[in-house]
Amino acid sequence: LGVLGGTFALGTFTKIANAKGAYVAFFVAAITMVCIKYMAPAGAVSIWSYSIISIAISLVVGIPVSIITRKMDDSKPVADSTIYHN
Image (cartoon, rainbow, N blue to C red; front, side, top):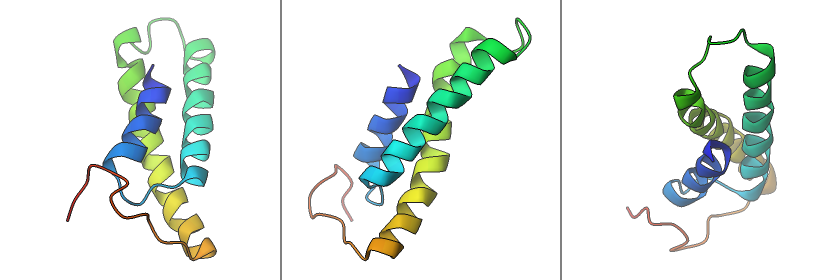
């Protein structure tokens, strides 16, 4: 739920996000969560914090990737595509 929630938050609440940033954020957050689940010692991370961690990772990774790929693509955000208004 946290990985999908992070991708949803990235697309809904930021004007900067694009598809490439969302894909990279989704995969990085998913891989991180699998690593935490199976490689961290038992009890090191609470199960209640999984969603918060994956949402934070999605935003921290997705926004910079979106900014970098937007500069490379020279694309502009679509007007009224998010709930964010100036």
